[in-house]
Length: 377
Image (cartoon, rainbow, N blue to C red):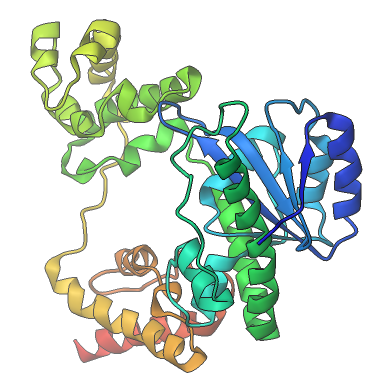
């Protein structure tokens, strides 16, 4: 298909076009970026479509993103994306803003029971009966000029996304459409709720196996790693590999030789940051008990798996009734958090991660199920 392509390569053109887009009921958005050796994504291209043509914004030539930020935040214009978590990072990095209201076509497909976590090409094939050419996602989006294939791929993607939105939205009930937008708002809010570096240790693997004194060391290492990754704009594993964190906190090497023997410790890390890492370990190990972090909760015991299955069944039944893919109903992490709030004897408390329509629709049923288990015991 022939697509009309409009290039936007300066601030004035972007501002003028944003004013036009803000009069539309929706715009489809896509991004192409590079993220091979960096912590943050580097934008190579932004694509916008109102359904008629493809607008390609060259981020390497734009200095003033304020008009685009205003578009992203305009409550009258629905922003349509697909599987948008990394796109959101690009928008936040470039403009300081996130799109709202946000309609993710991958989520919409789940609400229509078409499939969970559907890739874009597969969804376009299923809904529009169009077979997209093999992607250019792995090509160099920072090169200039972009190849004809790259330009065609980027333009086609965003124009089809606009048509996809029209088709999906027409099939969604008003209730489900509201739920898709609610989940979109939660995606954006989740990105804004960035974990502070000081709390990064809570996500480290096997942290629950460490003593409180060892957790103090893990906390110091994870905090430093997170701050350095952002400051150097490098992936976290370039600073200290994930699998090295637990043995570092457990064994607390005191010299470069023993540091180098730690599991998966990269020689470059030892050369570049070895002394700093040893100093961090020494300082954290010297902290008084009053400054140690609280012990991490253990994972749920194997005996809890039957109860977890019963809770999951509540979501499966509701998903079947509403014709929504089961994976969108109750997330495993949410159910585990619910169980951990009172296992084994209760009382239980609904976790903060169970929000919105899910809490309203299934919250009481989950608590009733757990209360019934307590009575049966």
